[in-house]
Amino acid sequence: MNQVLTMSYRDLYGEDEDAAQPAMLQLLTSPLAATDEVVSLYAAGLSPIEIAMPACLHAIGASKDQIDAAVEKATADAEQKCKCEDEDRDFQKEDQKLSLEERRASLKAAPQKEKAEANVEQTKAQTNKTNEEAKAAGKPPAAGGSSK
Image (cartoon, rainbow, N blue to C red; front, side):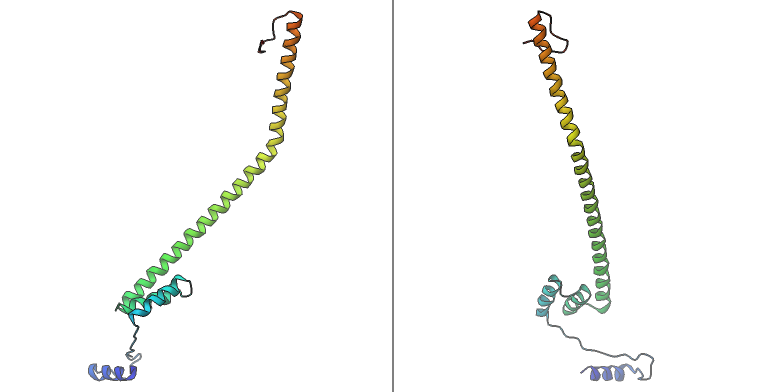
């Protein structure tokens, strides 16, 4: 069928068969119902955009130039999406790294915090003891102490 179309074209328009790149007509048919299958294959990741998009656009009658432009745009969009996803992954890795460093720092600080809290408790206990001894001796309580 393709050869008959090509010969008819050449007869009508007078193109020589000796040309560097003679025109060759090719009949491409794709039923519109098949586009659902192509879309499903693309959605499942089994068909790349470079194959799926031309098949679907051809089925609705898009020209070769329109199909090429759409595929080029879709490819560029996919590359941009990949770059964004890579940046997101890098950001998440950096965030996890900082979170881990914060946890390590807090673990190092935990014993010092506990020691400081123990010192505060010890100081309060000593102050209370001193105040009680002062009361027993009939002296006023120490500054900063509580009178009970």
